[in-house]
Image (cartoon, rainbow, N blue to C red):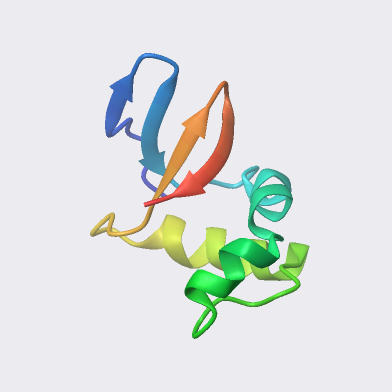
Length: 79
């Protein structure tokens, strides 16, 4: 896993996904409004197992294509 900070913007950090992001990811991703916009590949309901798989896959990607948006120390979304 890469743990390098990609970009700091005040209290927002764009960084690789990492172990420990799963609970916050479930909290924010388990939202029907999000699913309606990305439903072709996005599960709903979004479970802890979904988050564990995503964090493992995205966090291992050395190309850093999928990054976490961290707000106030917590993953709040992705880019």
